[in-house]
Image (cartoon, rainbow, N blue to C red; front, side, top):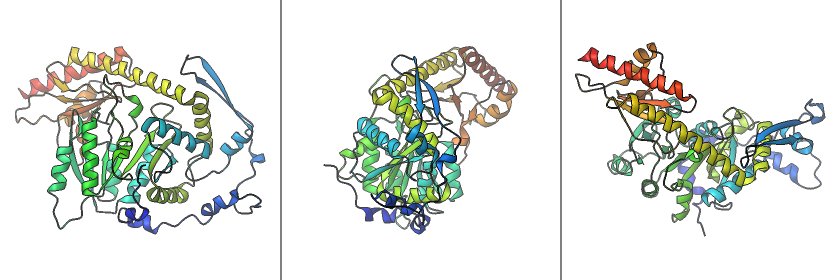
Length: 436
């Protein structure tokens, strides 16, 4: 039997802003409408008979055969999708999430956690950070780190404590060193942010050994893990996929230190903006309060469309679809890496990613001072030659110089990949010659 941490445990983790949040005076009463026999005069919902949409028809691919599947949304299902809905998400989609998390991570309802639907996982990450972190507090972030979270921590004037990463993911040794040498007079960080599969930008995937060590440190030093996992279903490594933090936590004496962020952006549609967060109930409650005052809810219609597709596929169809998507990106990686081997041999160094859509490589510029810097080369010289990538410095919290570059291989056809990498080769050779 899984033992959950008690609700009072999270009081020290909630930010001051989260503690001051109050339930929406209207939305907080919505559950009372469900009592049989109640005639509700509560909600200011528009009458759905005035909405002009009578039906929605979709054509999706059958994951088993790639043949088209017609999906029609109408009647009560459409009415639910056109109307205001529960802050945490439509019940049908939430139940699908609970079923998925049990199948994929072995986590069941009733273990002290619950799920909420968000407008993409980015929306939920922002709300979770604001629910936990106070202005000026220290936070642990793997480095290099997903650049999208840097503005969130910067806006709170957080002290970002970098934890090293390598080809095996986040370094538990680096994390342990940071925590064991933490000043006794200073409160330790309450949260660690990490992307464990196909990390953006490095493409690295954390091993099970690393994850288990990090979980042990979370318990020993009392911090929460923000497990941002948008590339979980884009794993294409040869070996078995390592369990998530969310799954591994169930093997701990107590559960409740992991907040898991999932996204459908990479496998269903990035434009539909659907993600979901699974975490301890006390934290989920204040996150839902944030949503209630910020946007009321994630749009019901996009949730309805998402559920209609997922329900038509079933969990077996969903798994087949994600396997197809991951194979697609494996082939894209192979094409890009082949071009790098052809054009950048001796000019760049990299480790082959096992998940995601990025390659993180180090330029070998042979600078006279020994400090190769990708910033000027990528932003100016490479761009002038007609190739655009991201210099590694934007993924480093302290913005220090680095020779690394992030390249995304998700979109380009093979001829464009070869031409882009060739242009990068020419740029590097020019830079070497200029500094000789």
